[in-house]
Length: 82
Image (cartoon, rainbow, N blue to C red; front, side, top):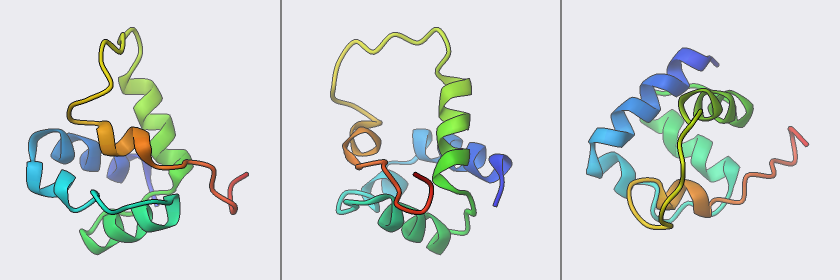
């Protein structure tokens, strides 16, 4: 598990619609991690949240649609990490 893997994942997902499409049916953090692991990425929800926070500094959300819609819709309370 690593921050680097989470960063690679976010970079790839931001540029590849096919990657984003694989997450359309994801409804939980566990599902999200399972799909990402199937794709060769290895990170925890805490690591993903950390890299998102780092990359989102000074970013202002202007709309609720777009590239990260699927990321916002996942219920990120993970029973293992809460």
